[in-house]
Length: 533
Image (cartoon, rainbow, N blue to C red; front, side, top):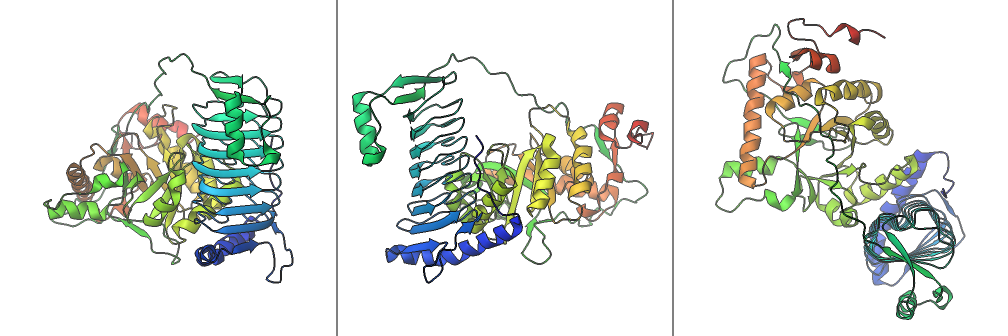
């Protein structure tokens, strides 16, 4: 059941208008809340209606006590991440209405698109004329009230909270739910495995109607309820991992002389260079390691100052408690915490393998909402499976992202060497004339040799898991990578990591040459099939 607003044909203009609305509203929201005033979108100062048409990503993180009213047909990601405001839409809303909600009261007087209330934790969302697919997906609390028909997978993957529908629902209601309740006053198909359909008890009817607190929306006694039903637990099969690493690729000097032992080498990499519109991020190494919690990077008061300096200069990717230099990894688990995470971090990397698939308009809405909270000058990128590298690069270039990172461990078992030509061809076709930089996320921790090989292959930034969690050990790991990388550059005869090129790489065996297109060592040419059409 696809129900999307009819957005206008010039998406860039819509994005600019949306940013401008958020920019103007920002300073006024807190003041209006203190004065108990209502801010309006879609009316002139004289009160004449000028309905909006497609504006998206509006009003993320509405503060407690704020009151908003909008007129028209709004786009996606409206009133996301709200923490206690009120938002009324006199018209339709697009996808992801109230996503990541944690306290807002939202009313959509007409139709809403897909993923309404996605990953919400608390608050109330009322939709008065039907909703698209996947409404209430991954809900973890709060109330989602729908009058009218609902699409497929209502409440999919929900963990807690209450969904009430006065209307018919589509197929697969509650698919994958592990908690919460879905109350349906209408027709409901047979639920999927893991979901039980049962009548409501008298006590439940009374409790639900008390929570709804609306005589016109009361649930009748004959409404049905969907809840989680345990399944037989069996051991899940292991996900395939990359069939080989980069150990079968060597780095050669060619005709260059080696450098003197005391020569310094430049390993700094700049990220988010946009031609003067912002200050790029300087990475001491072309590396963004991943840790779960940024607090784990803190060292004690009596720590070695050199260890403290290394960690203080090296940005990490983290899912919580980022430092001011870190990049926050946004996914379904921490999406509702986006306002606090984005405010203190130096950028955002959205895991679009974990978030729902989004079309171009929905991506625009997501970027407007995130950038409004993050700031225009900071880094933003997408993380996606390497098997979808062309789609990732096309989208990243189209939406003006700073970084496009390909995840090697996407379940395909693809060898790392085979990923190099895939990413290289796509980069040349889709990113060569843009400011978007390429990245690769390895399944294991990286070595200095891995980083040199990937940089020579055209990968700008290497992301990886860390080999240990202790902050002191991480400082020593980073220093060892720096030493190894410097040693490689000196051996080859280079003084900067930017001078590494594909000509410095050799496949050390036939199989690696066959899948990577690199020159086979000894043969010193790519295998013949790489020249065939």
